Image (tube, rainbow, N blue to C red; front, side, top):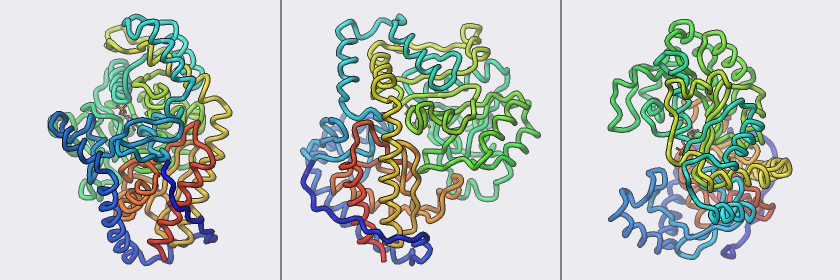
Length: 475
Ligand SMILES: Cc1ncc(COP(=O)(O)O)c(C=O)c1O
């Protein structure tokens, strides 16, 4: 970690600082600071720039996945250990990006490394189920209250297979998702991902059927099969189910909406959904790709006490390897093999199973969740103090090993409220943090992920850097 000058967190105290803010002035200041910080970032990351130039010749946008592309260029990492990562310029960062939330175990955790090394010595792949894979399936069932699971290789595959299963079992083709939600990049869920205001305005009551695919190459006609309703609006679901419930195979939802910052479910919302889905024979699918094993040992299912029919997992359940799973009620899952295809060469791969098992049984233990809660709250409270002191139009969400600052004074309730967040403030804060040794996800739709290897030192550094930012930009 590079030695940095430490600022002291300012305790402004008192709520509602954001309400007194002259947002236009702060936004103008954010643009100014953001531009200066971006310039500094380019100066600080010259080797990343050179690798970017080289990578562009072999990889579109110079990256392995379009989510890794970033302005002014991606920061290419060389390695990570514990709560830290290093870039190709040799700069060290405290890592709050954590592989888009897949690294709740932290980097190169000795238990995970040992499990992978042991498994590798015994053969890296057979396309035959091993005992470790069975044990991981048992652990997932135990944690999340599932009766059966099947393995996949990513979150995209998990939601794709769960939706296929729901369609196969119900014999219905239409699915419903949440407006502005992300469930991976397969065709069925690539509608209403990041719709503009023009596409959502005035449609609070209607499930959208005329939205555009989120990518070229997806037939627009598939939009007829994917409806979307706003998050946290049970009335919209009720109306849709009354009108078209018999056409609906499933309702897929991130129980805590996490691809627009973090949006918590209103009290009773998930319970209401559960009840409506049961009444209309619609399969309720929780997408726990981000929540599972992070916001509680048993994810949103445990935290909110609502059991879906099927749930999808990836990211942190696999100890930093490319694994995923979906599972749920035996009555549904056992339809696999009865005319419903679910397969894949690498599903349940022994390296992934060994890493996942070590992560869930040896690292992400009850102690780890207590630590996440303690450190997460320390971080969130530090950020809240800084926001109040600088009168920044922002709020903080604190949820176990996840949390975020969103640049809107009031908490978000749905995608439409996310469209009101201040992008200039986020951009400036991101470059500011990276230049001071805090590695964060490039995009205001993301959130921080703590790892089992984070300590108070890392949290306090984040708070110091953020406080300095708020004091510089605020009033
Ligand atoms: C909620 C949610 N579902 C599904 C996915 C897709 O997962 P993957 O990138 O592993 O395909 C993501 C990825 O960020 C996600 O956040």
